[in-house]
Image (cartoon, rainbow, N blue to C red):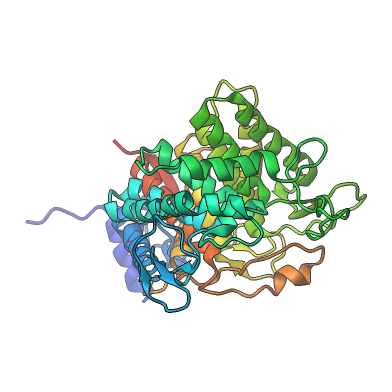
Length: 474
């Protein structure tokens, strides 16, 4: 004789018979009814199946890795670490000798762009999170080539910076933080992690540029639009302009120089940059930053571009990774990070993205910024900077949104192309997107890697139909 069915199970059967729809999967049963008798029509409406455009759950590590592997396969195929003769197209195998005809073999992306500095960092993170050596090998192979080229061509560039040729001249003779900062960050991050590549000369070049040669305001804040060397001022796009992007393009490099040299002056500089950028550009009421600021101007229309806010939040989590907790500025950076994450939280869309202009719903949902936020928020959860109960579900939703933009061949859709700065919304709202915009690939790798780590550490699942923190994992 079969045992009687529990009352709540009988209720579910009764309601299912009354209403011909799928109840869907529920992770927590509703409490058993207290009233006896026929069920009212609304008894199980809370359990109706919901169609979410972006998957509403925490991905398993294998699912995340499958997405990352597609990205890896595409990038490994389309970013060759090779030299060719620019005239004949023939391969050059001897990289130890400077060759005036040598160029990097063209691929979809440049191996020495700031975007690729972020990609190297993302590959390192993916290697750590997945245990897949291919990601580490990708970085080692390309960093090794850059180190060899630096050794061969740096003397040539130093001898005649104006007229010399080198396959990586923009790095060897940098003119902006974009040429040096993110690459430098990737070199030192790899070095700290134990890479055997010879980074000495490369860190010397890019570290010196970031800390000593980039233009600064009188109070030491990194800026653009300094002297042009001809008695005038550069227009980038105006004299004495702060770009929020430069919180990432320069500041983590300073912090990692502190880590690799042991000299606290670099930590001091990194903290000062975070504070001085934030004082000028962070809106504490909204919890987000403006993109551009011109020193000495009375008013600044606040255009809150998403990717620039991404560079800012990413800068802070990277600085905190190496800044000693005993440093007098540690808590200031931590509180600024928390304030920014709180602000960003209020602008995530129902599909998990953030808009191109964060607070303008009439602008498109942008992938690279969403990936950076997924990474930074998940990293903040993993490091204990913010609470997993409050921010873990948001990070998972953001990652799922990014994953939905990764095509089967590993390209990523919805990435805003390279963007300057402006003081009107049309400029940002109508920037094109492209799968060839390099800015989204490193952030996607970082986001997936950090989500793997977060979901290994904490459990998230449905509770009364909402995605919720469900405790730490053993």
